[in-house]
Length: 332
Image (tube, rainbow, N blue to C red; front, side):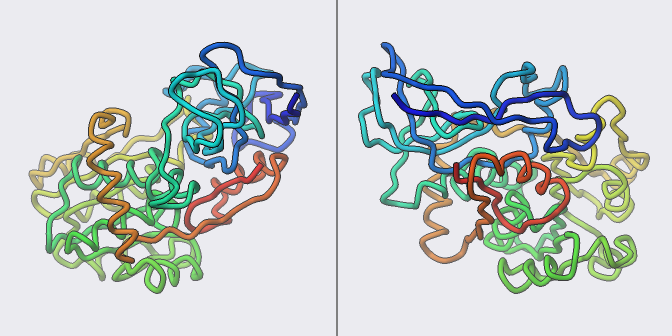
């Protein structure tokens, strides 16, 4: 028997989640039945989409009250009744927010911990991080050499990777983040050409100064008013990739859209949304390329790790309050 500790949704958040919206429960898990595996979770990924599952009717589904919170994770198989996975294999997939996952083996992807540490499969090589940045920047809007690229939420996990991928492809990169330390992180750690502190600077003025000929590509993780500030400064033929809108996730029943969308028509520009799962048949193309750039030192992603499954609610809140840089993880 294995003791599993899991984070369950106790009440639906009203606005920003509070730790009191969650509870920690304990259960005993035995041997997996046919087709199932038992996984000891090593790392959990703290992602913005989790917030959308805490209400009702979200794009990524809705967690029933009293059920474990949604989360992607990596871990090691400690018992298996599934032909495709053996004890000792490292896997990634939807582990939920818990220390141990008893789930169908078909839900998991075996990962190679010889080319990167397991946590990298939630970061640079992860679906909700590196793969999201890869397809959102290189496929959805096709960044080109010489483009001026602006990334919002640039000090977060997806934003950090997007900034670096744009640099790898010869673009000039401007990152937007909150706080002077994060701006230094953008320029000194991940190599952005410039950073804008939305908490301490006038973003519109700084965008005009840093992109006097207009913005060619915008990778948007934030939405809201910031999207309008960028739309007002796009170049002819600009491309905008809507990855997410973290500024809106606490009030999905009252999402505020852009007022200046006519700039798209005026400047022969386009704006498209995407979700990474639509590119699932191309993950095999992207992962070796991302791993190669990691090995060459062109792509890095610092990790902010919260330790203990009881830290999961606080870590999720931290994601929305900007208390981290790079990839936010929980080690159960």
